[in-house]
Length: 258
Image (cartoon, rainbow, N blue to C red; front, side, top):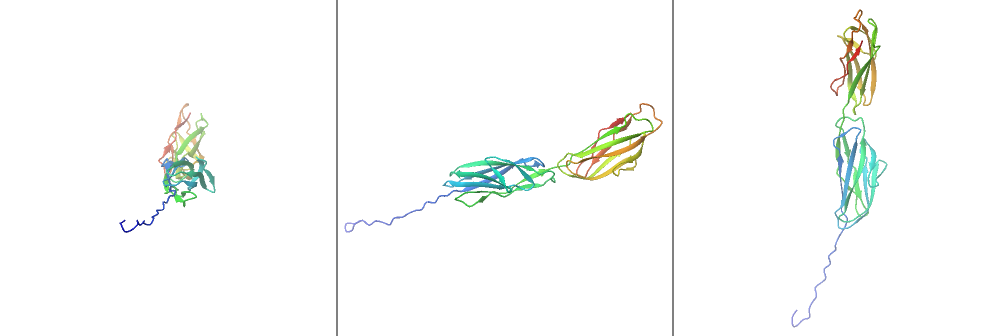
């Protein structure tokens, strides 16, 4: 400004303010490790850290391999192997969480990894945002059991006793190389064994091979009681066991016959 001129105005300056939703999605799984046949619960945490609300928000999570759907909170529904949550509107700064429960297959090999890698959040205003993959380690093992019954009891000297050996795998992993051994008891002699049982050095051996989780079976061993023997003599069959590649030997409880 001066005495000789009128004021001169400057040109207007405009600034454009941009605002948009910024969606995020993370996940944790528990427990880890998990037993084969048990459940994993995934918690999916989501949020909008942008400056504008998001509309039509949807979360999708693909079921991981070696699992089956159990349930989902917040109205999550399963279709075509994908669990979907229709969140709707999500205000700027808002957050929340939903949960997905799955059951792990059984049997599974010990150390199997359950990977949940395909899940995302989307909205009308944004492109889909994927979450980072998470893994859960499966723990499993065979659990071998063996027991025995005898018949008849009492038995006449010079007659036969037939032992029925029952075995099973109650674990959550298949067993391989399963072998059953049974020492022929004192005051008896070997007669026969079912299932290919063979006698060597006083021990009868059955080579069962693989035994699936949940599987069971029986074998029989027949022995002849010595004669003569005093009345009331007790025949004790107490040294028998089951073993496998994956386990330590498991012994059965002693059985006595009068």
